[in-house]
Image (cartoon, rainbow over all chains, first blue to last red; front, side):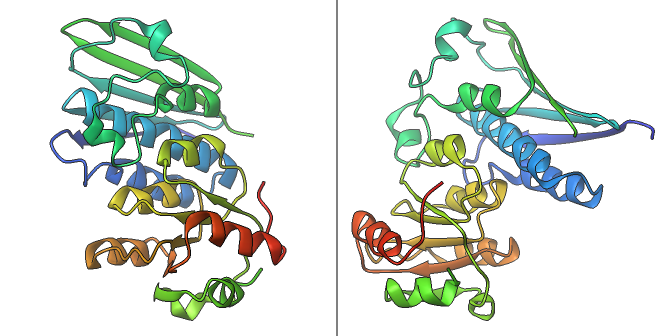
Length: 140
Length: 113
């Protein structure tokens, strides 16, 4: 099978819209007939990434590649970057404001959840330039 | 537990998915923190929550949760119900508080993960 490549823009302005890209991706993965547990993990990983982009980076882009044995999710933003990645990986650490918390997020679980549900997580970040989070999930 | 029994135990009102009350749920979780739902979900397919916004529906969609019960009498607006309907998620509202709603379902045999 040729790798399938999908690109989803993530609108940064609107918290209400967050999740649309993940929703579309999930539907596509279902159509491809992938196992439901892998689809669920990939959907959660991308959704957390999408929420992070909306909260911290004014949006960005999600690039998804599906091969026979792997899903790669690449979340690319041009936001402020992450000053301390190790700190950001700690469960419970968050820089999100009270407005985000009042919506049920900002508990410092985003990146830890992405790590929890993916097989590989890589974060490239530069202050003032942006962040690229790449997650790989094995199929089967 | 059948969704019709969830409705009965919680004296809930169904806001969408009335035609799917014969479906079964095998376990449940209760939280207002969506990040925690995303962190701890395994095979739970019923969510009880007092948080009302469109991301509750998205969270359920991503995690394969098939029914959401809003507690403390909370009612989502029409846009939220419509999104749930599109996602194939059954939505109910109950006047019970979160702790009591969870307790009643647990006592009737619906466990957590």
